[in-house]
Length: 123
Picture 1 (tube, rainbow, N blue to C red):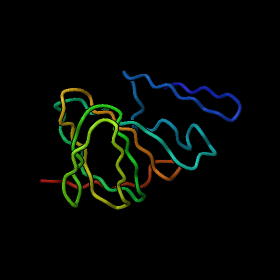
Picture 2 (cartoon, rainbow, N blue to C red):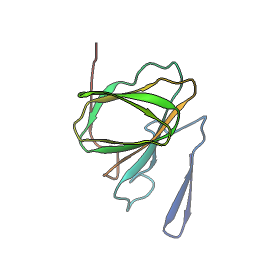
Picture 3 (cartoon, helix red, strand yellow):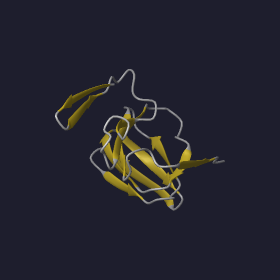
Picture 4 (cartoon, one colour):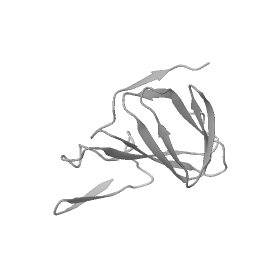
């Protein structure tokens, strides 16, 4: 990932072969005055469902590519490219790629860094 700074603006370029480990593209780490953060997650086809997590804050997600399923504490939500999803704070959720291409989701939190997150085992 490389950052370019022009005046007050920060532009981030991600190397798909070497994405940031935490998925965050813009955060307090590279933009000190930021009030929210933005990240991307890529799940290849056939990968296992992500771990089930809950964040201290709400999350918004935009599906940039692919199709999948959001497993929540209230049921399952199927989604596809072009859809946006709101995930309330403290809601258990996991992502599953149900398609044949990479699932790419762009996510954001209303804080300058990833909020505290809990994980739980699912049987």
